[in-house]
Length: 121
Image (cartoon, rainbow, N blue to C red; front, side):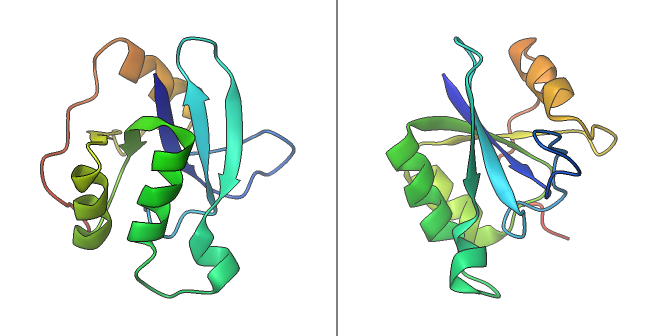
């Protein structure tokens, strides 16, 4: 299964940390949980210099990449709706988790709850 995680700009090559907000993330790390293959994709919001409204573009990107689930900390109403319309599951990463590998570990162990409503503060 392919999952996507919003990430901040890496401090050094490949050192990605979980971004606190889905839509404002630097990009997304798409991980195949079976093979372990990781692929970074830039947030389309950055290329288009959008302040808001990139949720639909991100959801379409995930659909093209075969993403079935997103692991995140915070998401707004628009992006949440676009992901759900495409059948992409949304899982909540605890606030204290900063490392992508830890988030993946929790997901694989079934320890991340499904987010059933937007939680943007």
